[in-house]
Image 1 (tube, rainbow, N blue to C red):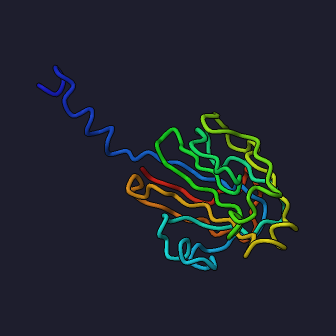
Image 2: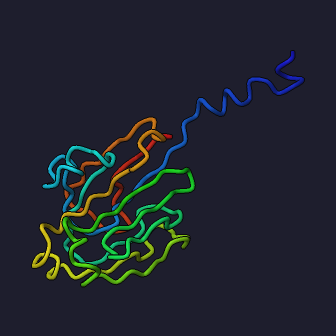
Length: 170
């Protein structure tokens, strides 16, 4: 009776249904397990869990709808936050910070709102191959404490803005 009068129990029912977010591929290329990234910071998940992609095109798009929270001055890495509060780091290549922005063109800035598929950064794959350790691009959830469960997709090839990579339950 009290439940009917005061609406008690409603919040408990809402909390039982977990929220879900899907992260799609920001880059067209070949899917790589995060543990296989040739950089211990990513392979040992020190920054968080996720996946990586070996790009076949020099363009990164938004893998989620949300807000740009950081564009590194060197344009090699972008931080995004989803409407559900998940924070993602897109790190184009390994040791690309040393390129000091050469070969990278950012199409977004901090505070911009983006939708899935919006262009974030264009980059010169040949230049990255020449000047950096690798073109492998990790996509990492940096606030794993906000994620109840993470399911990784197994597609071998990815299409930017289309191929699902991660399903997150919040």
